Image (cartoon, rainbow, N blue to C red):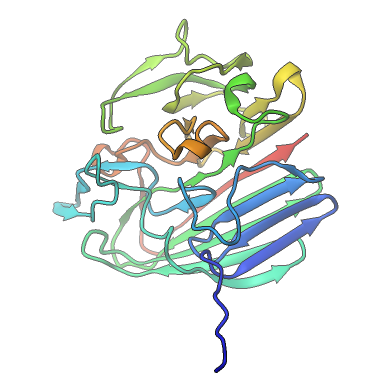
Length: 309
């Protein structure tokens, strides 16, 4: 009897190489499974024989983070999404992270994947989605393009969920974090924002690099300082200021979520720092904070990347 081979849980594997850089992009969710430079893990990813856990490297479409009770109003209609964060009763991280994406272009340094999101009861809109990953001379660049194929405007948001490995350390506690945000959102026990506050004088002010210590983060930041190129940069620096990884994102991402992984399974806790660029705030489908109203035929373009050193 012919023995069937078992495919990886994350589907087809698209390997990218450029010099000492190596990354693997996957079919399931269109996510980034791993990224390393010179044998150093830049991302705390997962193995080819594992199911993605904790959202590692997943794109979050057509919304990032949580929607309270999965309910929202759009153009006079009440819509109900499936509850996917059962303990808190929220809809979380969109609709595409467990769906298959199609590789439409793959060369040694770049891959592009597409997904057609068809209407469903909770999200009755059509989107053409494309993500490209490219290894350039100084790091990784990720670009996402979304086009509304519906006959009416649709609500839209995007986020990504990479975990940055702590440089030269086993856990993030001994690392320094630099985060150019002057405001953080305050959330309830279900992770839904109800207020905001300046970070001045609080444990959440990382505008100058500061040791993370045992601070627990599952926090959304905004009011981001940006460089002349329009990008905001979050940096994690190893103990003794040894080794640094920078994650940058363009103006399409006015929010960033930082998560220290304290609710993950024990063996994964604080092993990586999730730095999640987001185009909108948590619960944006209900609150409208940062939400994009994508008109018929309109496209939304967003870019982020990682620069290891």
